[in-house]
Length: 249
Image 1 (cartoon, helix red, strand yellow):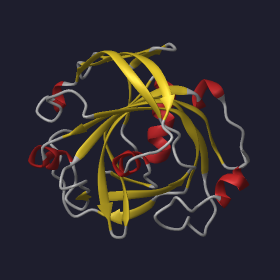
Image 2 (cartoon, one colour; image 1 turned 90 degrees about the vertical axis):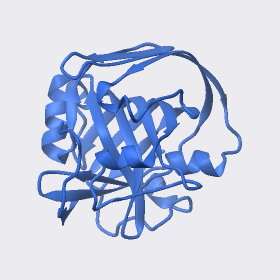
Image 3 (tube, helix red, strand yellow; image 1 turned 180 degrees about the vertical axis):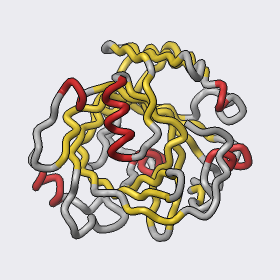
Image 4 (cartoon, helix red, strand yellow; image 1 turned 60 degrees about the vertical axis):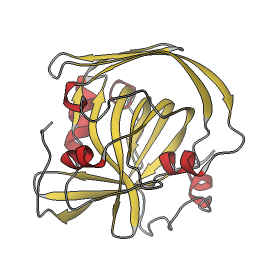
């Protein structure tokens, strides 16, 4: 599917795509989603006060998303696989700002050190390097600095023919909000709806000491997706008035 075809399909979005030109292309492929209902009081420790935590039926959620980033590039330039292709794990929650709903990252890890440095420098997202290995049915990572560990073994099931409202709420997000030292940065994104498959997880070993009071049980919902092609716009900076996170990346 061409970029123009992607841009022409917008009926699934909650708001119109930006009128200015997109800045970056990327693909988020072979994605494993582990979704958790969490305690709101505990989650608030990790989210800037400028952002409103989004709720589904009165409950907050976070998601661990383990996938492979591919072909990331600026508009009008080719991708460079040694940097543009890498495995990534992000831990995100769901937030609102003004009239938009989106995601906020509690953690982002990349499997290539140089890719993390470039991505962090360009986007100001809190990328850090972790050792990541994946095969067709395993996804493993470790980070000795933070003592983080993720080990998943899984089997991909059938594609979902119908999605629930929760399925869509957890996956169809078209904005990203992230804090830097002085601002809340906002990014608009666009892609087609995520194709979602069932997934059977045979092994899940998750240990992130920073989140031990936040992620205290097994995931409430899991998904797999073959991926989406993504267009991203430039960041919009909004002045920051407070800072209440319990740790820094």
